[in-house]
Length: 310
Image (cartoon, rainbow, N blue to C red; front, side, top):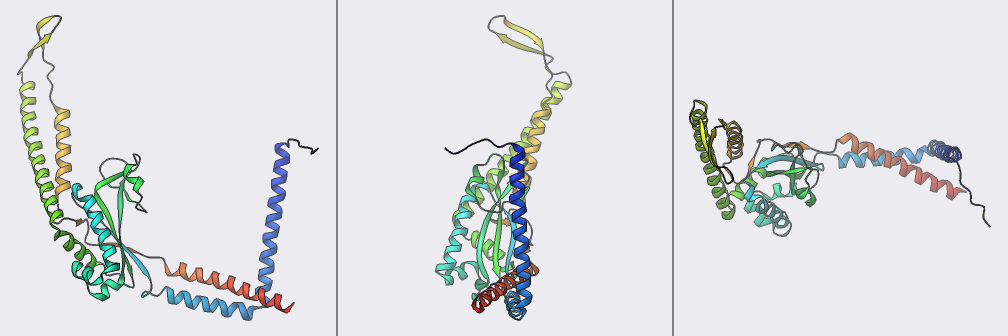
């Protein structure tokens, strides 16, 4: 029979320390043997590292670097699904029929070669105050139903993946012009703009009406009110002098939001700024990665040479 017994916490800690000590000792032995091997076969390791650094230099040249140009665009909420579908269609059209793609976005063949992809990312409102806070790192469908991270329905982050260029202006202008020429998007945009203006007019009239009511109540109008109760019959009681402050405040808040919502919406899609944030992987990181890969490759070649000599 096997002797199965429970171990104490102190014994478990001792076992974990021994395993950790052994692992650290093996790691130092490996580093020591690697350094000795690289010194012994430096005539192999150094040339391999130089080759990899040269390859990293070529890969990290501006001509071969991938840039990400990102900007936030606003639109009417009713057009969101159609806009995402149109941008997906443009990406597929670029890979299938480049001539039509160039015509639709008014681009040259050289500009299309620089463009790798158009990505659409949702804008997140963490505080649920209708003010955008951040752009999602990925277009995850579950974000649309996430109750913690509210997606701003009238904003999208448009990201152009470019290679060898940072000139994003032609792609911004081409995308805006292409979407403006789609009749269904333009019609929906006009209807949504008219409905929003109507709602703003209604808010203004309602604010004016409630202000008149509040002045009437405040200066003594309706001091007594008739109250109907099925048990007590008809009674007369003093008015509560409701000043409608809460209603007026909510209407002003809604009107200000709608005014900001409809402002500067001249096109179907409108970029918040004429400039985009351009980013890429820093060149020093690429060179450092190729340097480490070159050193490891040199060690591997040195190890194979050593085994062959044995």
